[in-house]
Amino acid sequence: MAQQTRHAPNRLERRKAHTRSALVRAAQTFIAAGKPNVPILELTQAADVGMGSFYNHFDSREQLIGAAVEDALDRYGALLDELTVGLDDPAHVFAQSFRLTGRLHRRQPELSKVLLNTGLALAGSAKGLAPRARRDIEDGVRAGRFGVRDPELAMVTVAGAALCLGQLLHDHPERDDATATDQVTEDVLRMLGLPPEDAREICQRPLPRF
Image (cartoon, rainbow, N blue to C red; front, side):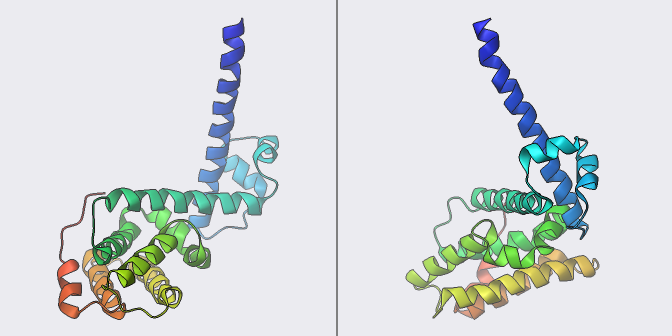
């Protein structure tokens, strides 16, 4: 009997986690479709959970939408961390992250649209691409690879380039995403102060599979 008592909360926690995850995934689908103001009832129906279950996890639709965006940023940030392990040159780290981000828009379109439809939140977030890009820019400045006077202002340009590139790739499916992304990455590296020949060489390096 004691053993059953110990296991019951674990099953309950798993059920709660499953319900929360279903709600977050449903919210991300609506965000990707450009419908962040969807009624709570539609969210719960899409998640296949009851209305009461919604309020066991979130106080409002806005809170769920925030959690959905945060989850997307966390997942993407974890992917970037995994794919840049072992790189020592901060310019290479920055370039690889930017090049992978550009390719993300075609390879993971739903995640891409969640990020694009919350662009301002993405640019200023403490999660996902933005803090990693700031870190890599600051590391590049300290290493003498970048000539940036104000990393925060540089991030304005970097975030704008990343978001506009993503939208362009969605709007123009005929464009080759790899070619377009590498060209924009090269231009951004030059904007950050990297010599043109270094920027071109870095953007020609092979990327990890993802």
